[in-house]
Image 1 (cartoon, rainbow, N blue to C red):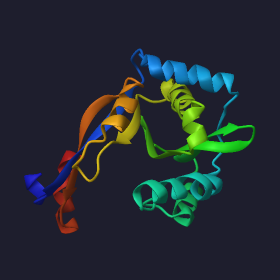
Image 2: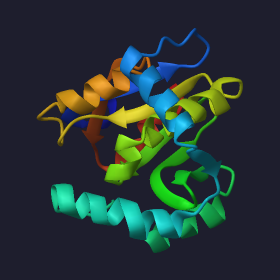
Image 3: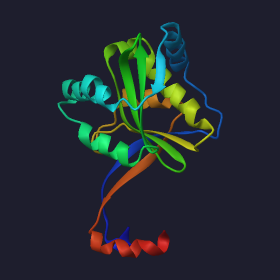
Image 4: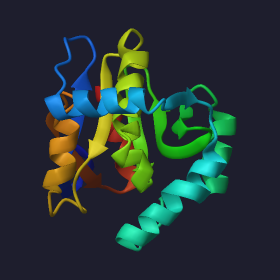
Length: 193
């Protein structure tokens, strides 16, 4: 990005399922989806950000990685309020108990998963698999792409387990470049937009 003096900081591995193609699920994903259906897992786009953030996402991120989500609960609620059709929360429930969730950022051609998390019961029951599958089905007729996000730690270590999981939903790998530049140079991009 020479025209704006941008420096490439890192390159992550991003996973995208093409919704306008036939989707070939990995056998393990198919088995977990069937298991979730037998467990009567319910999938809802209910925008229940509060319970997801407090009961699943924040505790899971802290327990596993000693980190917090980029957006606080207050920030994500404000973003949803300002963009109610573009920031959604989909959750999986077993007998009214939330066990998994995905926060979705909706763009013109893409549904992007920003936050993905589940409790142990969400994984062992197959709920997280069913949640991904139902979201892919939901957006298949509306969008071209379903972005499952990256599987890196700041462009370094590739999490092979997470990568294999996302590939199980027929996601293809793309390079996700992160650039840094001074905003005073942004006008240089206008001729390309």
